[in-house]
Image (cartoon, rainbow, N blue to C red; front, top):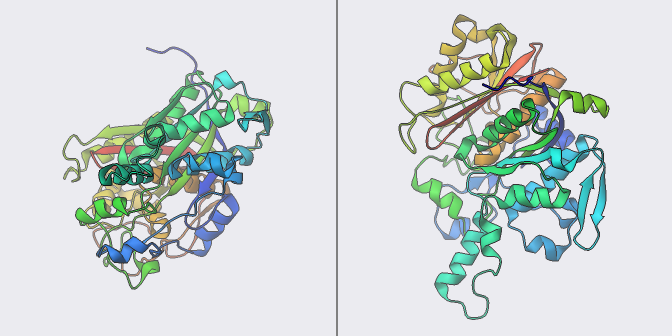
Length: 432
């Protein structure tokens, strides 16, 4: 048993790169105004391939300057890695951590005031370098004599390229790894970071999720989900298509993006005078051990993940006043999660505000947990929960406190839930 003192962990920096806004202010303003990012897909392949789903929430590709790279350097990175770098730089700057050049020729940076051996990176992703896989494999199969596969396709596409390139750029020499657990990846990455900091193995961790599964050259990410018949086909009303907990929901909307947080041991954050936006109090994770696609019917492991997280946080159930739900807007997920919340909170479930940010952003797969942890941290810090967008006719099977207008949040703690293909269940408890 580990008998070392358990260190308190805080959030000092937030780096959202999303379809509704880049950076904390733009992102938070979009949440409060209910401005969504779901659009008719602007890609040539969306119509040509005859997809039933023609909508999604794509994000803009970061300009190379946003992560201190040249155009040539940026071209050698998969688009998902570019997102990881840009969101990480946003988070570092939001945390008040100054960056200074380390090697001008390589355009690498050091983080002032941080021991590089005590700083790490843990990022979650669903797939990794999907755009590179599509491009390079197509060239290989077609045996294109002039272009051929991308020379650096292998180091570009592998999922560990995301945190590795972040560590290289910012000189972070502590533990560096990728968590690949589908839609739970971003949340699980933050949970792993929490453990590293609690155990005093590191002082600072960049943690969260990144995925670029929508705006790829051939639309393979969309095609894969289309074959599973899990997505909305409300193509004529993109802004109303993602409808978590609504009786008229017809599936999720594919999104993408990045959500990176700076987590620190509280003593380290206070020593450098950092602003603290939230606390990471607890983490719980379980596995359904049932199916790669279908939720386990009892919902027992969803319930257990939330209960483990609350127990790990050392708080009372009454302290939780808000849940940022997984809330995918699929027929199966929403009532299952609602039932699990009833089992966790019992009769006081109606006192717990519940929403799903996916109504605005779509489902960004491995990035969702990171982005939604940012939403939860901001909600606690600013005392507001954003309304349930597109909730016109609540499903009676989802009998929860679903705010129709932005609502005041006074409770000291909140949950952020993620449930992924393969039965991965993960829950974070954040506190003021």
